[in-house]
Length: 371
Ligand SMILES: *Cc1c(COP(=O)(O)O)cnc(C)c1O
Image (cartoon, rainbow, N blue to C red; front, side, top):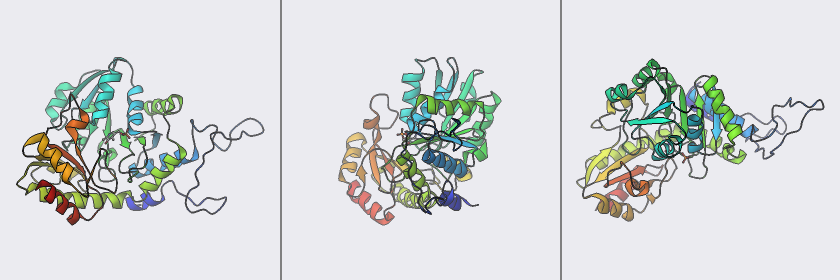
């Protein structure tokens, strides 16, 4: 089946008890035991498992063509479980342009608990080869990355990771459906389902998908229910509902972003546009090879730095000044001031999450804001 069909049907079946076409939400925290004390219906207690969580996990596994998945209360909770599945002394190699919260998690929490970590620019494969060590257990990629939209060659990275026996995880939050990390050798996929899966800025969530249900994944699974950072049944329901329109939304987000990137690239007040769909983008060729479209995220650098960038964001009328991404409404954000000290984001950079409004309206809005 094609991905649009999987997205609509995966994890869904007509409720056999009532004929309900939309799935019921199982708020029950606890489930009845059989007379002899077993749980033949498969559920015991909702932290361990819940019907809505199970259908979400099954749905996302089918969409990514993985064997298994574990859903969490946020993308960060999901990232945390992967890092917790490692052992003290293990070395993690992460992308320098990884999501700010992920690198902060590694630097501020996991290094204190004995993980060793290095950050390299993974769009530079020679730098990756130099940074990989014998004790590297995990290679953490994100592509396109945040906020510079750097593109990482996943197939090449998988080869380097596997040569030293490391697991390759790809944070695929920015390009669900458009990019198929398991097809190019990735072992684990992470999504902040808060973003495109949910798609409407109204639910937090995260999921780890395993290409194979191996021992490492079993550790993530046990961290899920022993650690307890699980999503609510309603959150699972919302995220699976969002997934049904995901392929079509990704197509529309990408189409709009491409038009806006082309407009910005010609604008005299804009110094640089970071969008992998542009021929001028250093990662364009690799992106064209590993993505079916270039996604809905882009960054622009305004000439004249921080104040000029803040003023553009202040003048937009349709774009909403807010962090996050992946919703139907377009958002604009000055990354450096959100990330604060230690940010690698250029001062004049604005990150844009292109929504599903008409591209002409968005372009007109940016044009008047740039002045
Ligand atoms: C938002 C985001 C996360 C973190 O997800 P939360 O749901 O906010 O915890 C991780 N990676 C990327 C790329 C993100 O955009």
